[in-house]
Length: 634
Image (tube, rainbow, N blue to C red; front, side):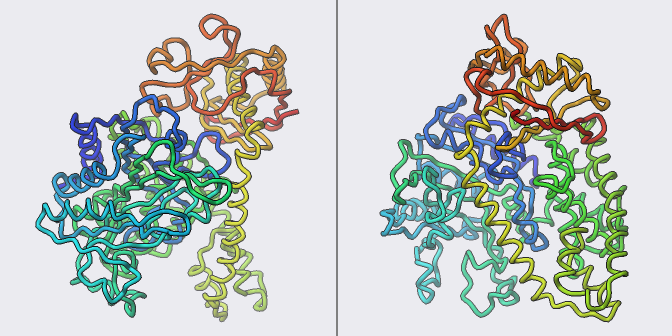
């Protein structure tokens, strides 16, 4: 039977077969490199936007991968049968080459002939069209699907979801843009000018009406359909036909090249292969759940325990992969999300009868996750190594859980010292925000004081906070790189000079462990065994500014990765780069006279003199053997 690793490999093998001719590309890191517009890589297409817009990809026009993906917006959804924060997105792309006919046939063949899913369990959705935008109804995809199903002996009737009475017997459903249009920003109205997007066709797996999931759900009084969220149907793949680009006047024009952007949930396809509507009952989570139940004595098949066990299993897998990719717990940005994952898992563990600081249990789970992902096909560049990553992740978990124990004490003291009038829904939300107390735990503690919390009011406060956060995030996306690309480009190039200066002053052991750039500053993590002295900081800052004052040229070369490494180029997570790479060199001559040479894919200035003076503002520890520097334009 399938495992995560064998199913992933089967997908890669299917698309790299000579008949389909795709080339494997590496997964991008979970934290987008030097991109302040988004916290995490949340889709497979995110790293490929330049190529979808027409830039040539060094590996060609047919690409395939499995992208590590994290979606923070799904944190509150975890606990049901299918939502996870971390998952793998199987992807294949056509950059201006094949289109709907090949894509739909290949994915259908993979599902039915390779994974051997019963074709009568598969249902499809397509785009209804939008006359106002001049985007037609996708009858072309419908005709292709009907032909594919007919070859399997199935008459695939197409119906419109708007016609509730006529949906019976349908296998192909037309939906509006909220369901069957894809862009990074959502529906066409929300897309900024220049954003690519297009209609999509989703495939759903039907776990069967006999499960009575619909009758037991919140949608029991509405007609059951593939998108009703009752749990009977699960989306397992989405073929996006990215052929449009939004214009400044709100209209849409065809892109110079028509692209295919496919994304399929690896864990969800695995669940379909096992015919279980619960992704947590597949090999992807088997070892983790066994460890949790052994520690807490809570049985997974008991319905009251399932949501908490799922949260722990998901959050620990996600936290492990975030730590491997360089994220560390903090109160800001990615670090805040990681902290929340670990602490929320700890609270759920306590609710199941375990400890609030389950260090050994969580360390054991992290080791299982790392061992599983260390087996990934090397071409994908996951870069997970057992000997290196297990001790790092286990140390981070132990430190954070220890801190949480202290935070927990402070939160409990705040509750104990509060008067009866203070124990309100707003107080509960403050505990959630400041100390990581989930509502249900606070509810129990308040109940001991004779206070009943109104969950509806708490959720209203929470939604208000979420709306404010989304507005702030939307502002970040809107302003992001498009408004400050010049300054972020300067900072990006400055990170190359910073690493070169650190290696010159501190030694060649210095290696980048992560970076983050905003319009206000750059942050750079690197390996070093102790705090830098004031003299070392001054020497590094002077060296950077000397190179800037020299107005050195910055040149780009495309070459094979092995040749680049042999020429002296360095890279952060070298395994994530494809066989052919971009090399940026700072110096008078890229072959004989240079101060920095790195594999990189980001924006750079043409000459260092355009950067302006750099000032180091802060140096601190991140974890054992890793330091962090902040710098600003002077």
